[in-house]
Image (cartoon, rainbow, N blue to C red; front, side, top):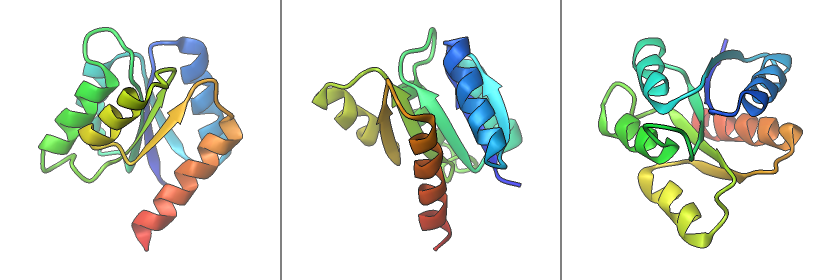
Length: 124
């Protein structure tokens, strides 16, 4: 089963994303902050991570950079999920190593589709 790490400090969004991913057949690790996301990524080795950019402590950008810098976690696919929609924010996400960037408000169905497409491309 594909494991997806979801890190968002907004419990409603975190729970919605986790619920939709579980409905789609994924195993979900849901956490509320960047530090816990890094710890879970290191210990559980998810296939993909969905990271909110704005979280207390370590931001999603910080988490992305940290995961990309470590050989054990560098291959985790990363989607940024954020309300930060300015061009420089999007560029910052991709510069940090994100594979995709989804802005809030978002369609949960579209997010699941984008995750499935990213996983398919990665397997090919």
